[in-house]
Every structure is written in structure tokens, then in C-alpha cells.
Length: 152
Image (cartoon, rainbow, N blue to C red):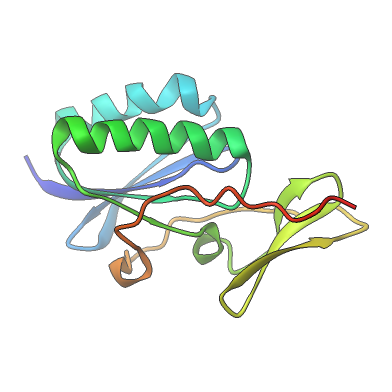
């Protein structure tokens, strides 16, 4: 079985999973289903096709529940299957566009700082899997980014 790395972007719908061999995207998995329902099934399918060497995911900012579900599932798989888990913020996969927080508040990244900013109009957020996986953007500290500024 080919040895691969998996990248999970699960902060909104659709869920995106990239399969990378030697840091090059070889397969995309897209699902409109809820993370809690579909992540175990997709992981099992991928594990039947590939030898998974490393797990990467977007640890926020975004939906608290989406971050929590992804982290708990991936951290569990990391421990149970002895696969290293790495994380980075989601701005790397949406061209640094605002990410929905709550109401009219959105997360924005200025330099290396993540803040909230109010927008009067809805900001469209779409993420994309990169063709090449830049592992240098990821940290071995895979803790979730549960961030939200004061709601005003």
C-alpha cells in the first residue's frame, strides 16, 4: 500500500481531505456530511487503501464544535494508530480570507495575530486543498485554536 499523509480541513461544509504522497496531492475526498458522522468512515476507507504516515489538520479558528470533533477524532487516531498529528491555522487554505466567528464577527489574521473583526456583509469562506503540502507550516502542537474575541 502506498505511504501517504492526510490533510483534514473540517471547519465548515464541505469537509475536505487531501491525500498526499511525497507532499503531492494525489486524491481529494469531499463530503457535505457532518464531521462527527463521516470522519470515522472516511478515515477507515483511506486506511484500507493507504499506509497513513502523518495526519495534518486545520485547528481553527472557526466553529468550536467542528474544531473539537476533528481534534478529538484525529488525536484519538494519532494515539491508537501511532501516527503523528500536526496542525496549522485555516488561513493557509483560504488565501487569508476572513473566517466566520459569530453573528457579523469574523476571524482575521493580521501578520501572525488572529483577531475578530466585524463585517456588515456576509463574507464567503471557501477552503481549498493545496497541490503541494507545505509541512513547514504545521506544528507538532496540534492543540485546537479556540479563539473568539469579545462579542460586541
